[in-house]
Image (cartoon, rainbow, N blue to C red; front, top):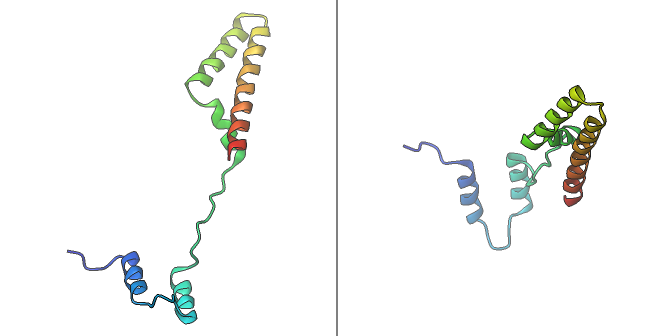
Length: 101
C-alpha cells in the first residue's frame, strides 16, 4: 500500500491547480525554497584519468605485452616503436573525443 505520494506527483498536482498565466511571484519563491533551482549540475571529470582509460582494454593490453616482450627479446627499437604506437593511439583517441564534445 502506498502511504505517501512521491514528491514529483505532488509538484505536478500543485502545478495543475494554478492558472494558465503561471505561478505568482510568491508561489515561485516558495517552490524555489522548497525544491531548489531547476537546473542540471554539470559533472566534472578529471581529464587526465579519462586519458589514462585509453591505455586500458584488450587492444592496449596486447600492445603493452608486445612492448614488454620486444623489450626483453630484441634491441629495443621494436619496443620503442610499439610504445610510440600505443601512446599515439591514446593521444589521437583522446583528442578526437575531446574535439567531438
